[in-house]
Image (cartoon, rainbow, N blue to C red):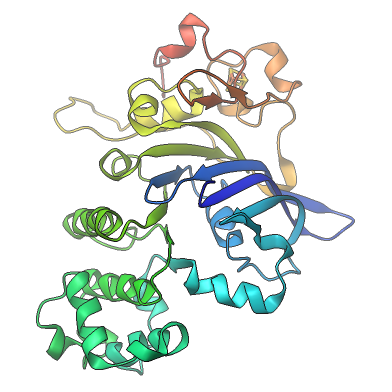
Length: 330
Ligand code: SF4
C-alpha cells in the first residue's frame, strides 16, 4: 500500500453557481521513503493539491467535490476534525517557501521547535531534543542558536529551522512547497542536499513542489508535471527528463538555462497559464502548444498509461515530430 495515494481529486473555488475547477482529476502515488517532485508553472494547481493532503485549505471557499486522498490507506477527505488534527504533523508535515514569513518573529527558535514537540512528542519537549534536531538539519553551534530570534539568522538557516520544526513530530511524509524559492542559488543546493540526506537517514517520503526543473534530477525518484489543474505527465524522473513525451514537459525542460549554451535570448514558453475562469476547451495546453492539431482544441485528452510506469496526457505523444524541440520559442 502506498503511503500517499491521491485518486481523481477534484477541487473547486468560486461560488456554486460559478465554480472554478482548480484541480481536475489529479491522481498521484508516493511510496514510503521515496521522493516525488510535482512541477509546473505558477497557477497550475501544485500547491493547492499539496495543501489538500492534510486538508489545510479552508472550506469554503474550497470545495472538495470528488476523489480520495488516502494517507496510510485512510481517506483524509472523510476524516473527522479530531483525526485530521492528529495526522497534521503526526503523519504529514509541511515546509513552505519564505521561512521568514512562517517563523514567529517574537519567539526564539528553540521555543518554536519546542512548541511542536510539546504537541506531538511531549516527553521530548526539552532543550536536548531541540539541539538534536538543529544538529540534524546542519545548524552549527545549536546550543547557542536555539536562543536566537528568526531575524538573527540568514534565510538558509531559517529554512533549516523550519525543516527541524517539521521533523520534530517525526512525520512519515514531508511536503516541501517551493522550499528554495526565496533563497540564493548556493543555499538552494544546500537545502536540496539536506532534504535528500534526511529522506535517506529517516526513511521519510518527500513530496517536493517546485517550478524549478533544474533541481529535480538530483533529488526525485518520480516526476509529475501539472498544467492548468491537471497532471499532464508522470514517470521515473530520469526517463521523463531524458525523454519528455508531453509538449509542455518538453517546453519546461527547454526553458531551463544551460551553462555554455551560446544564446542571445533565453527560451520561454509563449503565453501564460490560463486563469480559472477561462480554461480552454479541448486540450488545456493547445493555445500554447506549437504542435497542436485541429482536434486538440475540441477533444480533451485523457491521461494515457504507457510502459515503464509512464503516463502522458497527449494522444500525439508518439508522433515523430512531437519528440523534437519545436522551432521558435520552445
Ligand atoms: Fe499539444 Fe494537442 Fe498534445 Fe495538447 S493534445 S499537448 S495541444 S499536441
